[in-house]
Length: 378
Image (cartoon, rainbow, N blue to C red; front, side, top):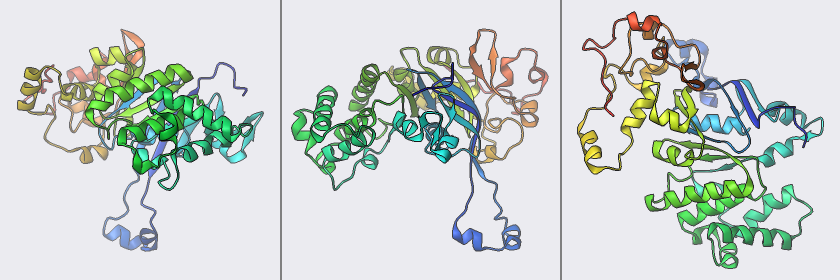
């Protein structure tokens, strides 16, 4: 496949994804009634003005609490969700334009679908309960490689089963999903995603539903498959330790809050020296391996302002995090940081926070909390 010169594998430019209640019931209600009862709700801004590039072989971990927009961003990046505005480009070609026109130059939309795959959190979502594992895996393999015979497909699938530890491979291939454990089904899901040798895989909370004893093994397997197939990952997780593990070999971490990326940079830098208060809170909330430290954290109060909730923050003016931010000052309720800003340590580590600018008006503004800033203990 040809590509635009010097284009990244994926380029997201000012991507926004908004959702509204478009049910038949809501559409049938007259506008005057909606206004009277306050039912004209603003659309949910699941992803709000996100720009980032992903190169071949990258591992980008997107972390944040539930409702932060991380899964929606991941699905938009691989073309499973259409952006409300902005663009997603695959090797320089707009994904939505390719889908509409089916082909641009010598690039076919089928190539995009083949090269952007997904591993679901729920492994049952990618397996048909009425088909054997082999039948479910042969289908996508033959769709994108019609020259392969059934024997070729079976041989290739059995080879990968041996790699991922589904042995004896012949026996596992002829089982139905209900005959597999949760960990085994997730391994099959990984095989399904990798069979077509994609350029990038969205791993959406791929180990969250698994037994804790299996999570490291599954993440090790994902990294092994990355080396084997030379693919890139977007790894979505609410668990900072999982993100740390998957990005330990030079990956990046992006932190999302209410649809916005509030911090992004090399994983080691973000974890060792977080710039945004929200990132610091996520780090504080991560379970420490030392039992004494973990016990002490459990006895502490959560370092968030109690004046507001996350729902209040979604409609607040100024910085979206300021109603909960332990470091918020008056200026934070009036102005929002304009995009991601790097500090003096380098442009690769960026955060959407006034605190990164030592000359900003923030430092001359009064704290919103009458008792002053809340400390975030390490």
